[in-house]
Image 1 (cartoon, rainbow, N blue to C red):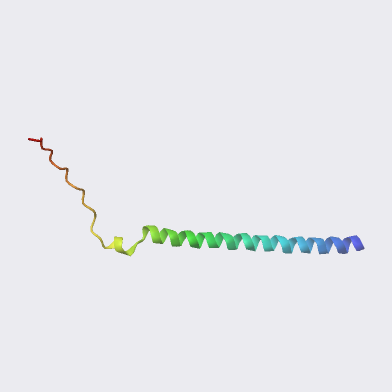
Image 2: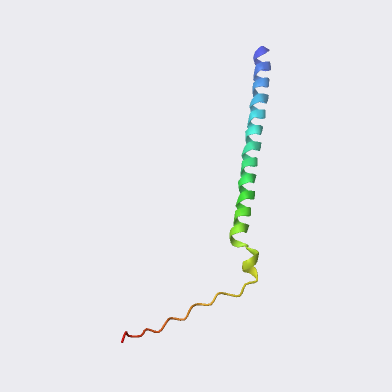
Length: 67
């Protein structure tokens, strides 16, 4: 009888521990996902680059011999 009660409480404790670990891992994953989206937006979705004209390539300079 005592072994059954102990086992039941042990299993409930393990389930609670596993649920806590699962929630912590999901919270950490959500944090990194949100941070990654923010960094991506700062780096690649800059508002000043959206309206800018495409960059032009510089023309090569003509070489001249020294006199």
